[in-house]
Amino acid sequence: MTDQYAVIGNPIAHSKSPLIHLEFAKQTYQDLSYESILSPLDGFNLKVSELINQGYKGVNVTVPFKLEAFARCNKLSEFAKASGAVNTLIFNEQQVIGDNTDGTGLVNDLQSNLNTKLNGKRILLLGAGGAARGALLSLILENPAEIVISNRTLTKVHELIEVMSKSDVLENKPLRLRAANYETLTDQVFDVVINATSAGLTDTALPIPNTIFSVNCLAYDMMYGRETPFMQQARKCGVNVSDGLGMLVEQAAEAFYIWRGIRPETRSVIQQVRNLIKL
Ligand code: NDP
Image (cartoon, rainbow, N blue to C red; front, side, top):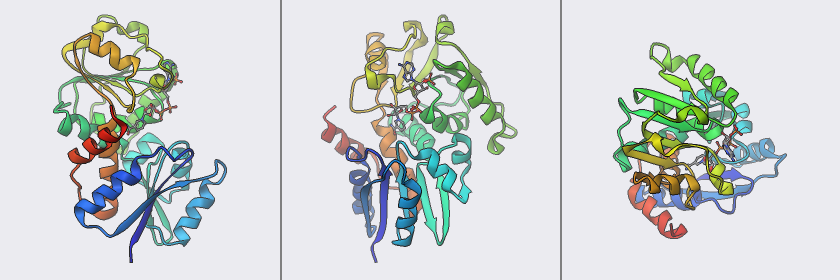
């Protein structure tokens, strides 16, 4: 029987996940279906129960349900625990297991696709919302020299650092994390600058100085499908720039691996989605 999977969100019509997962399935000869499911804003838990009863094997979870998905799980991966959010659910008998593949997706895109190794690098992470939380544990595990985190609301950065300091996975590891206001970033230079804010959605520029970008810096915006003011600023500074489309495909590949035990090839799929959104 064909194994059923889906992505749940609201809105969901824009989701590229069905295209990506069906491409992975074709490539790896997996007999599965994958569709987009719109859940009512107040009906996520019910929708998950319906899917479990219908025999679905798992789902991806997107905006705005990642926190509800976290709360729904009987068991959580360390990545889910560290981020407080779940983007991948595994239905195993009546158990609901939660994982978060965003961080692995980001790191795989940076290191494998963009050839930017993180070991020993100075990283600036902009933002402290769900995407930044999802990314941080994976970034720390790559042993960068330091990760500086800046956010409009600095208290959220302190909370994030507090969560990381309690992570079991990082028990004997130096965290090398530092909170910084945007205003204090002058005179600080980074090898990798990651924009995990949603400021690009409203075409808002972040108050970051041009001097943060080192000569060989990679400026990475987790957003995709548009050229954000952050990307424009970095381009003007002459550094390498990437959007977050590779992260989208890589986080899907990690979810696919969790469900199916097979790693799909991602580069051709990234190109396929890029052709589709024409950016
Ligand atoms: P959240 O709503 O959880 O967090 C938003 C973050 O952006 C907060 O840090 C917020 O700061 C900051 N922010 C919003 N507007 C502004 C502004 N005008 N100026 C400065 N800071 C601002 O969103 P997510 O973390 O879930 O998502 C962030 C981005 O990451 C989105 O664009 C999303 O599309 C992208 N993303 C991409 C993925 C991929 O696979 N490529 C995966 C997940 C997310 P404050 O705390 O002060 O409000």
